[in-house]
Image (cartoon, rainbow over the protein chains, first blue to last red):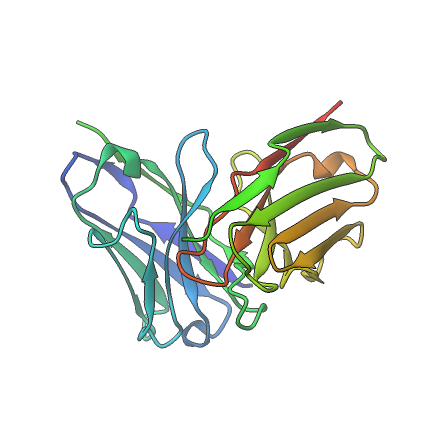
Length: 121
Length: 107
């Protein structure tokens, strides 16, 4: 079964750091681009970051550029999002996703269940 | 950055109705347009990619059209399980922005 499982969310103080992870199973992880999307409470979806299958190409939303770093360990079938200098507005459910079918259109067809990040003092 | 604008923001419809949601890009994005459905407390679900390609296991009552700057998601006959929020997303360039969402509610 194709599956993504996020972990690492939690409560962090403003200015703090957190790393969330996404463990993949059931597909050839290294072959596919991966994405992080977040959703603040009661708000819409916000694209955060993406990474190519090899990990050589990374992309970021303006709102997180310079603070967040996306990476992947293909030997561990795991995606990461390192979040530094966290702000209250980063509070959201963070979803990881994989593009396994859309072949260059970067549609996310496989999603994790989400992990909640709360930035508050 | 490319801005994506959906209309309407919400709509009320009855089971069996034909429903249309529109998405407009601030510049041409060719056919790099995906549609998602999201239900409360759940992850989004990919419905359509490349503007008009139906994702597998998605019912054929869903369809997408358009290219350039104007796109449409159509549900030909609304079913009870279709009441949800729908988002468009452009993947022509980074950042791969979403529209603000369209909530489809029961009339």
